[in-house]
Length: 438
Image (cartoon, rainbow, N blue to C red):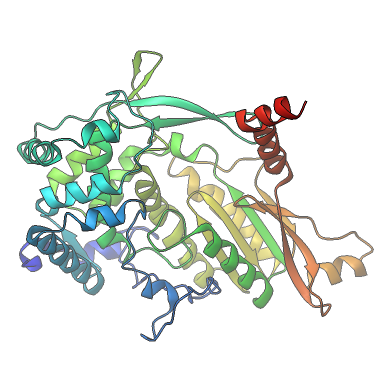
């Protein structure tokens, strides 16, 4: 593929005029050993390449399920698809100001087929009512037809089916279940866009990225708190992020790298498709349905410009001490050496989010004293043990290891554990067991 014919360079003058967090970014590969991001769990394989573990895992598929099946359908056209996407990634890595003007032609029949086999077979159907098993017969003809509709502009996104799941605190979280063909096309688009944004995203961003996991985010946070000069932790919760994401800003952020109007129109179709709830169509003017295939990537792109680039610049220009950052989707935890830095950041962060129609949750956002020196300082002042904070399903507690040195202890969040035990207790299998023994 001749990638240089498909792309254009953003003028340097335009980049200099952009506000902080929206300009030309430094190289940020999937490299976990960056400032304040080190300490991800080593993979269980030999690393003879000399690359850090996350870089050596970049070739891992976005979704593991059914990868053996997609390999059985490999063809010469799929090999060309892979080569073309590798060219996109190479261009994105080497030219940070580049805008990609012809991305949709990478969405081929082969990529659609691979995307279909990457979906979960038992996933709930959308408004179309079509399941994975029902769609697979005559798959090749369906893929050719879907590919034709996409490139002719005849493809129409369907509304997401609105469902609710119970959160650990008893509230309900709305999810959007996409129609099967929408899932297929979204997965293919994510595969294409990942070639660009995996070269842009920061090392402290872990959520919903290929080769990254919650465990890596937790271990990166552990290492950051135990090895850096952290005395204060800010647990920052963005209120209703997916529901309040501003689509106008999202499209502006996308246009920093994506200048293919057909690709942008495709994304707009999904954003504007609305939701179906109890048989009634509802328009959604803001936000993106949480639960769709493409929503996590769009959220990461949005927060890359709103938060990641900005916080990277802030800690270099404004902080007086160490600042560590770990972000998993819209969950953020930051560590500070000095309380003055933590308080100033919290004020600046609120102002930053307000510019993009977002706000911090007043009850869930806390700045606490936590870290190696916190317990010692609180004991000297006659205060109790440091407070705890929750992140990714675990309560983080200030403690000591067997040698009496500072350590961060992790326990499953109590309300989540109680909810899981309640689910087990009321499950049909357990209920049947108690009927049997009684």
